[in-house]
Image (cartoon, rainbow over all chains, first blue to last red):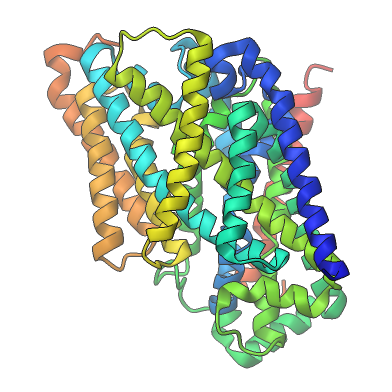
Length: 483
Length: 33
C-alpha cells in the first residue's frame, strides 16, 4: 500500500472513529430521554450545532458533485442558483424555526408526520394522515438515500482504492453504527464536525483556483469558449426566463421547512436557543459552501473536456492540489454525503418505527427500553434496505433520483405543514393536499419537461389550493372546532 | 461588477445574506444592552 492510500485510509478511519465516538457520547442523552432522546435529541440542540446540522444536512453530495457538474455544463447560472439555498435557509430559520419548535412542543410531537397529523385533529383522521405521511417519507426518502449511497460509493472507491460496492458496505456500516447508537444527537454532533470538514474542503478548492487564475481571467476564458456560460440569455436549465434561477429560493425555503429530515432539526432545538445565533451560523456556512461550483467553471475554462461533468471537482483537485490536500477535499465530499445520508436514515427509520407503529397500533404501550430497541432495529433495517435497493436500482441519474424523492415529498407536505400557521384547515384538506402534492409532482417529474424546480413548486401550489378548497368544503361538517 | 449578470447577482446575494445575517445578529444580540 503506498503512502497516499495509507494516508487516505487513516483519514477515513480517524474521522469514522470520531463519528462513532460521538454516537456513543450521544447514547447517554438517548438513554436519559427515551423516545424524545432518540428522535429529537431531547430537544437539546444549541445554535452552533443546530445551525451546522441544518447546513450539513441540506448540502448533500449535490453541493460537491452535482452542482459543480451543472456549473461545468451551464456556467455561472448554476453558481447563482445554488447560492439561493443560502438566503432560503437563513430566512426559513429566522422566521419559522422558533414557531415550529414551540408548536411541536405544545402539540407534544417528535417527528414531521406526527406534527402534520397533530395539527389536524385527533382519532382516525390523525392516524390516517400520520400513516400516509410516514409511508411517503419512507418511500420517497429511500429513493434519495439510494442516490446518496451511489455517490458515496463513487467517491469512496476512488479515495480508498476498493470497489464501489465494498466502500458502500463499509461506510453504510459506520453511518448505521452512530445513527443507531446516538440517534438525532449523534447525527447533529457529527454534522457539526462534518460541516467544518466541508467548509475546509470548499475553501481549499476556491483558494487553489484563485491562486492559479483571477476572476476576470476565468470569466474571460469562459466567455471566449461560450458567451452563454457567462451572460446567459435564458435561465437554462432552470427555465427560459432569466428569473428562473431565483425559483430555487422558494424551493429551498420549502425544502428546509417541509422535508422530514430537515425540519426535524428545527424541532430538536432547545427551548432557549437564540435563533439569531443559528442564523449567523447558517449564513456563513451556506455562503462558504455555495462557492464550490466555481470548480465547475474552472474545469470548463482551463481543463480538457470531461466525459462526465460530475467529475469537475475531482478533475480540479487532481490538477491544482497535491494528493494529500486532494484527499482532504475527498473526505469533505464524503462528509457532505454522509451527513445527508445519516439524516435520511434517521428520518426513514423514525417514520417506520415511531409514526407508522403508532398509526397502526395506537393503543400499544412499549417500555422505553423496548421502544429504543425498535427504533434502533429500524435504523439497521432501513440502512440494509437502501443497500439492497441500490444493488437492484436502475441506473438513473443521481441528481434525478434525489430531486424525485425530495421534490415530491416537499410538494406533499409543505401545505399542511405551513398553512396552519396562518389558516387552519381540516384533516380532509390535509390528506387531500398531501396526495395532490405527491401525485402532481410525481406526474410532472416523470411525464413532463417542466424542470426539477418548477415541478415541485407547481405541486406545492396545487397542494395549497387543495388544502384550502377541501378544508372549506369539509369545515362546516365535523372539524371546524377540532383545533 | 464583472460583466456577467449571473456572477454579479451571485456577489450581490452573497453580500445581502452575510450583511443581513450580521445586522440581524447584532440587533438581537445587543438590543437589550
